[in-house]
Each structure stands twice: as C-alpha cells, then as structure tokens.
Amino acid sequence: MTRTVRRIRRPLQGAAVAAAALLALGACSPSGADSSAKPDSSGSGKLSGEVTVFAAASLKESFTTLGERFEKEHPGTKVTFSFGGSDSLAASITGGAPADVFASASPKTMKIVTDAEDASGPPVTFVRNKLEIATLPGNPHHVSSLEDLTAPGLKVVLCDKEVPCGAAAHKALDTSGLKLTPVSYEQDVKAALTKVELKEADAAVVYKSDVHAAGDKVAGVEFPESADAVNDYPIALLKDARNAEAAKAFIALVRSAEGQKVLSGAGFLKP
Image (cartoon, rainbow, N blue to C red; front, side):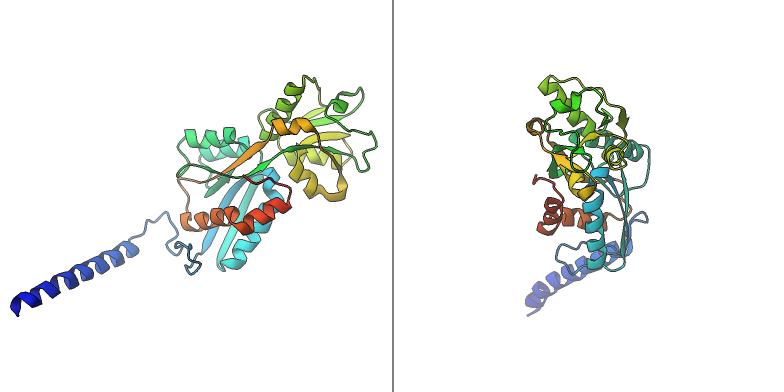
C-alpha cells in the first residue's frame, strides 16, 4: 500500500510545482510590457492599453477603420496611428521612436527596420497595391495613358523616389521608356494626391487605393504599365513593442478575413 501511495503523490506534487511556477511567471511580467495584455487567439483573452502603429500613408483610411473595430472588439484598448512616407517612418523606428507595429508600403523600406534588427520576427505581406493616375474631376485634359503625362504644359506630381509610390512610378516610367519631369516630388502619396485635389496639379501617379479614397475629388485612370510595378505591403511586430500582445492581435485583425475585406474594399489587392 505504501508503494501505491508514493506512485500517486509524485505526479500530484509535480502538478503543484508546475502550477506554482506558472503563477510566479505571471507575477513577474517584464516592466516594459503591458501586464494586462494577454494572448487573444481564442477571443476570450483580455487586452488593454495603447497600441502604436506606424503605417504607410496609403493605409490611412483602411487602418483607421480597422483601428476603430479593434477598439470596439477590445474595450480598454486604444490604437494610435502615425501615417507617413514609409522611408520616413522606418527612419523614425530605427532612430528609437516608440512603436509597436510597422506596416510599410514596400519590402525595401521594411528592410531598413529588419536590417537594424528592430523587428520581432519576419515581416508578413498582408496586401498589395498598384498604381493609378489621378486627374482632375472629369479628366479635362483627357489623360488616358502614362505617355499622356509627358504632354507639354501638363502639371504632373510624383512621389519622391525614396518613397514606395515614387519608386514604383519611376519603375513604370523606365519600363515604358518614358521621361517625365514633374512639377514637384512629394514625401508621401497623400501629399501627391492633395496637389490634384487642390487643383495645384493636373495629374499625379498614386495608388489605386488613394484614388478610391478620394472619391469624386479626382478621376482615376488605369494604365497597363502598373502591372510591372505592384508593391507588396509587409507588416511586422517591433522588437521594443510596449504592448506586444495587443499589437499581435491588431496584426491578426489586419490579416483576418474581416481585415482583408476592409482592405480589398479600399482598393488593395490580395497578397
């Protein structure tokens, strides 16, 4: 009988030690993390605190919508966005700016962050985007092709070459053998689009998603060369994320069927 009792007690004691260890780990969460944020893969975890997302300017409308949904699904959370040119955002992250998530408009700008070892794990492509020409409402200059943008007297705006939309536009122009001198280079795609919306330019080469977001403020013109300059959009959790679990949950929402529906509705392509 004594031997039987011993055989029963040993696994019970092991279970008690394991439970105690788990409790100790829970009580000793790192001070840099939000201890109230827990994994939410089952939908039953409790997330709280602020999530800071650095995202390409072209994601502004769709990510704002997803941020509102995230806050509604997880009461007690707040999603704060910083939108801008992907190159500038990447430089801010590597310079020490506090952020939890980075969503870039190109693998090249994401590589700035990964090369600096500021990402936690490999980035994942969540959408793609292609270029479109934005013209004044009604397309009064009858722009129907990329070549039409080279017409004398037409005021055209491009994104800066270091910005993903600018790099893509130059790739499309180079592939076509076209030379275009814009009236200005803008630091992000929204700034380029705004020039047309304010009638300070006749046309701009931007993303299809931005033409969609502008509604009747501009007219969109598709061109076949855009197929040669489609941008992949990667997203990554950052190494120094202060609210890693909530950040993971936001990334999961972006990649979910719900998130993809919002992004597709905004004009983005599936990854």
